[in-house]
Length: 246
Ligand code: PEP
Image (cartoon, rainbow, N blue to C red; front, side, top):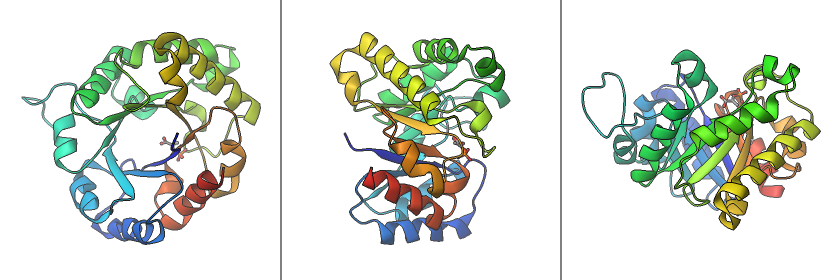
């Protein structure tokens, strides 16, 4: 399995940020892991043009439909047309800010697979869930509801992102990360069989160059989905290096 370092720029970046991609492209012509940047939709096409063969690009969301009267949205086909090969679906900020439900996320993931894109399906508990001891139940329910039936190791990635760890500097213990990743793997194998052993499971939530190596040593962690630390090539490079060495 090729591990994956995925960057989510969220609502950050401008044309000036293209230099960060060219810096990554220059530094990683033959990386020891897959590298992905998901910029805002405004930059996807430009960034895809300069990212080079070793750095994939993708979108942070897509609509479930292929086209039509959906002001402000972009379809999976449009992501592909702009050079993207991945789509993040069900990020907690989409679930919270836009009220996206598990069926919504599943429909977007299905649209991504139909467009021959790789879907990164995000799941994760709130602090309230964790403190109430509901983490595995919440994540299990999100997984069952959000991951499409035609998911395979080749077309789907799952990102476990505790909501309370995103952008906060707080990170679960390594045991807590391992417990959830092991549980996700077991659920995927039960549902999809042996193929799911090769499905990549990313951890996301305040990953930095300084904590990446210890997180990547946890069982069933096959990479990271990174927000803040993916904005600068130097920071993201530290995470890529740790993943390639893991
Ligand atoms: C994210 O947005 O998916 C994320 C993990 O953000 P950060 O790395 O900034 O916590």
